[in-house]
View 1 (cartoon, helix red, strand yellow):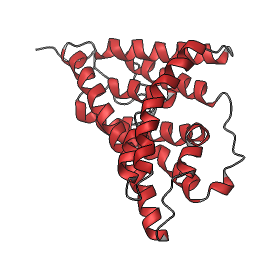
View 2: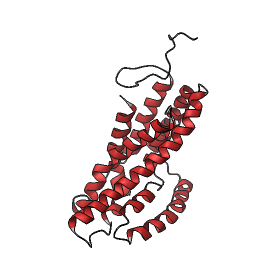
View 3: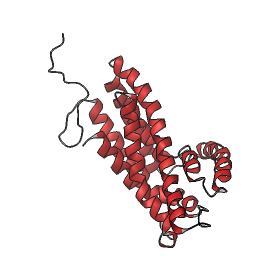
View 4: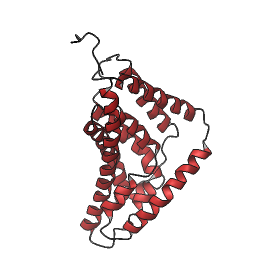
Length: 228
C-alpha cells in the first residue's frame, strides 16, 4: 500500500470520528444567507482551507523527517513512532482517560475557536475559517502527522497530509450540506485506538524493513544493495 493510499483511507475511516467531533461545527457554518451555490462554494472552500493547513503541517513534519533520512535514521524513526502509536492505542483500549491532556486541548482550542468565530461571521470567510480549523488539536491529526514525519522529503510529508485531509472531506461535506442525516450519528468508541494500532503496525513493519507485499511498500532500505 502506498503512503498516499494509507493517508487517504486513514482520513476516510477517521472521518467517522471527525464528524462527531467537528460535525456540529461544520453543520453550523453560517453561509446560508446567500444563494445555494454561494453557500455551497463557501463550504467547499472551508474544507479546502482545512486541507491547506494539514498540507502545511505535513510539510513541516516532512522537513523534520528528511533530516532523519539524511542521517540514515529514518528506519529508526519509523520504528519509534510506530511503537508510540501502538502504545497510545493500548492506553485507549484500556479505557483510561487523561484529564490533563483534555484540559490542555481545551485551552488550545479556545483561541482558535475565537478566530474562527470572526471569519465565520463573514459571508466570505470559508477559506480562512477552514484554515484555522486545521489547527484544532485532534488525535487523528496527530496520527497523520506521525505518518508524514516518516517522509523522505518535506513535499512527501505535505502530500501525505493532503491525502489524509482529502479522505476526511466527503463525510464532513455531507455533514455540512445534509445535517439532519447526521444529528444522531455515533462513531464506534474503539475506532480511533484501532486506527492508531493499524497505523502503528504499518510504521513498525516499515521500520523493521519487512517488505510485506501490499502492506509496507516501499521498504526504507534494501540490505542486499551494494554499498559504494
